[in-house]
Length: 136
Image: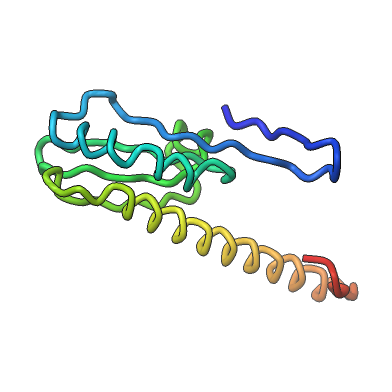
């Protein structure tokens, strides 16, 4: 479960993303490449509110890197970014960075569209809705 820690100095939430290998049975070559890129992958996700999951598809001979919140991953819902590559390629660090960047962009766009939807609802009801400078 993803739990946020609160820093005492400025009261901003600090998340700790993690890397999960699913189902835990990577074959030899992908496991070797994941071990090689593990520190890079861990640094990419360490301050993110979501996790990176690595899953091998034996039928298609591919390995996927998935960026998703843990609660959404368990329930198979919510925002999900997945990139796959051949299991014989050493590109897992790059796939993890791409998945994290794409997830951040999509989450940002999703939050902006949510703000716009609330603004439209309030405007229909006759309320004024403004965002002051310095607020997000």
